Image 1 (cartoon, one colour):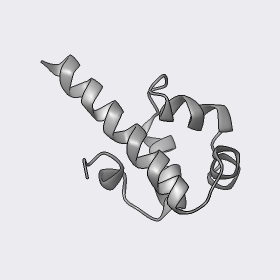
Image 2 (image 1 turned 135 degrees about the vertical axis):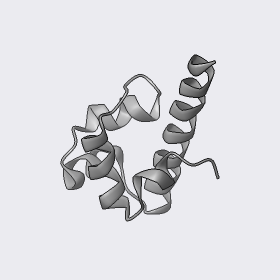
Image 3 (image 1 turned 180 degrees about the vertical axis):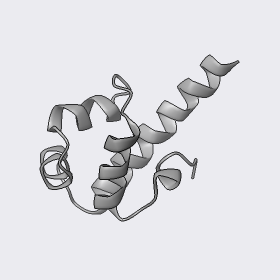
Image 4 (image 1 turned 90 degrees about the vertical axis):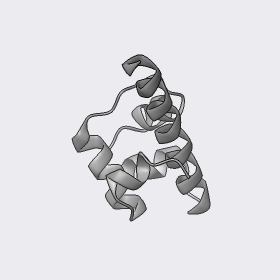
Length: 75
């Protein structure tokens, strides 16, 4: 059961970061640079390859001006 929930959370996170980034007309490289996160990590999160730490999520959320909870909440 937790595996399904985890997979769903990764999907929601990936979609939310990508859509918020695109709404703000940010390339992955720019989001990474301005939030202090490596661009390749941003790409891996959006492709559901990486599992970011809370610190990384906090940095991305702050730059996108949303909460970490919003990044993990299905729209």
